[in-house]
Amino acid sequence: MPNTYQLSWNSKKYDWEARMYASMADPTKRFFAQYLGRHNKPDKFAPGDIVYISCAKKCIMKGVLRTGFTKRVETPYDEFVKSSDDSVNPQRGENWYCDIEITNWFMGENQRELRGNQTTFCQPTNAFWNEN
Image (tube, rainbow, N blue to C red; front, side):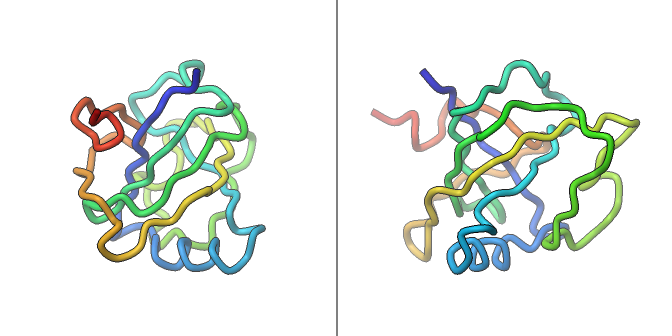
């Protein structure tokens, strides 16, 4: 059974709207490499895990991990990065990335509130997908 995570993007450093619209218009833009972040262990994630992507305190998209995290020699290029500082790009030589495919988009009133987090990936206990 896949695990479910929240992936938080910083709207000051990542153009999430451009990523969203580009991925809706062009199927090749639905795939992207995602940096692991500071506080996660790469082996806890697996292909098939579900990711709800948040930015500006809203759930904007849903995706699925197509690969687990692997160390990469080079930083994958992402045309939607606004900033090239260390909070967006790898730090201390830790180039762990996975590949994610965007599967769903949430527009307007369908963007549920989803608190932003300091870590890139997390598993909030009070997220809407945990409501039953």
